Structure formats: C-alpha cells, structure tokens
Amino acid sequence: MTSTNIDQYLASLEQTFAPERAQGQHAVLQYQFTGDVVGACYAVIADGALHAAPGEHAAPNATIQADFALWQQILAHTVDRLMAYQDGQYTILGDVELALDSDAWFNH
Image 1 (tube, one colour):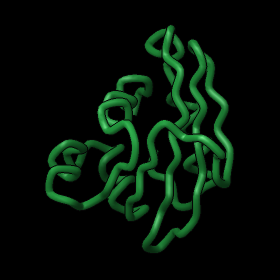
Image 2: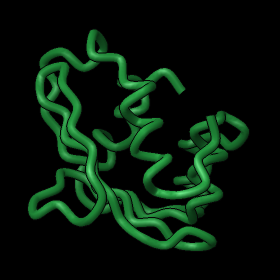
Image 3: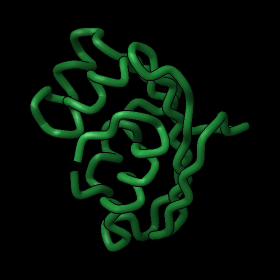
Image 4: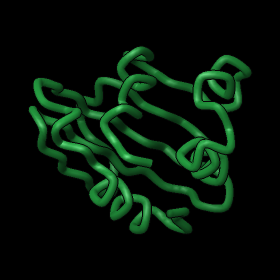
C-alpha cells in the first residue's frame, strides 16, 4: 500500500504492524519527510504495541529524514533500505541500527 500523505502513512503503519515481531522492543521512531509531502510523524513501539501519531516526539531513539516518495519506494521494496542509506539518499539520526532493524516489525 503506497501512501500519498502522512495520515495514510500512519494508517499503513498501524495496518502493517506485526506485534508478535515487536515483543520486547521499546523504541520511538521519528519520521521527517521532505519532497512532495512535507511533515513529521512518529511511531512508539512498546513491547508489542504501536502508537503512531503526526508531529514531533520529544525523545525519539532514531529520526529518519527522507524524501516521502523515496520512503514509499523503500517500504514497497523497490529501493533497498540499506543501500539507499549507505548511498546517502536518506539520513538517520540517533540509533541507526534500531532504525534499520525496525523494518522487521512491519509486514510491508
């Protein structure tokens, strides 16, 4: 499911979240988007539960800064997440490993 705005992206996070894969995980992922869709949202994962909301979180573990269209391609697996990161197509501030591993918590 490709999102065309942040509200759709938040809905897709909730729809694709795999709580069984996130058991024991505690993380706050901040997303800052540029490009055709500009804005921010975050996801709080706490031991198999997800809370996703628009805006900025006060204390994220990792902040992903990406062009919204690129991020949709990464989620659709048409662009490799790790290669795009290594190529500097998007940035991660904070816990890079956590941000890269967080893909396993979702059924994209």
